[in-house]
Amino acid sequence: MHTQPYLIAGVDEVGRGPLAGSVVAAAVILNPAKRIEGLLDSKLLTEAARERLDVEIRAHALSYCIAEASVEEIDTINILHASMLAMQRAIEGLNIQPNIALIDGNRCPEIDCPSTAIVKGDQRVQAISAASIIAKVSRDNAMMDLHEQYPEYGFDSHKGYPTAQHRQAILDHGVIDLHRRSFKPVKEALAKARQHEGAPV
Image (cartoon, rainbow, N blue to C red; front, side, top):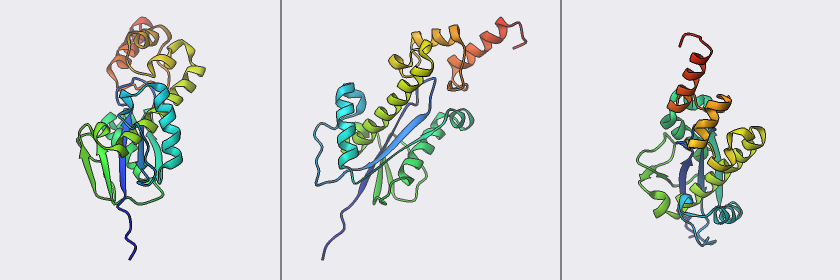
């Protein structure tokens, strides 16, 4: 009798901390017959290594899906719930149903299959590492596209994170639609702009 393989989906999100852009999640079911060397937490890899692995993961995984929650959703339901929503969408977007989803972090989104949260999972489980890599590459590419539209904000270097450069750019050039208005530095910049205009805050 041929037994069905036990399919594990690794799930991770990237982009909780930035002041701009969507939060992006990925779910990956690796192929046990196609081992990918060098899978690590995306934050521990160079950009070149991430991009090389991103190509390999997409080529060899049994299934993968990248999903996101928008800036509007982040501002409406908060970043934690938006991260869960992005992960839920990524898992639901897989074209194979996994036996279990292993989620990086300490809580699981609401999904139809069994799931387990694993703290530092992106360093301990290869499928989660793979998800963290393709989510990061996808989000970084989106921020590079954003840089083309808004070069004065420097999205190509900080990828939307709250660096001194980014915070200064918000004060200098204002808040755009892709900024998360529920995040404190963006809120403060909006308040300063209103004061500057002499409007009641």
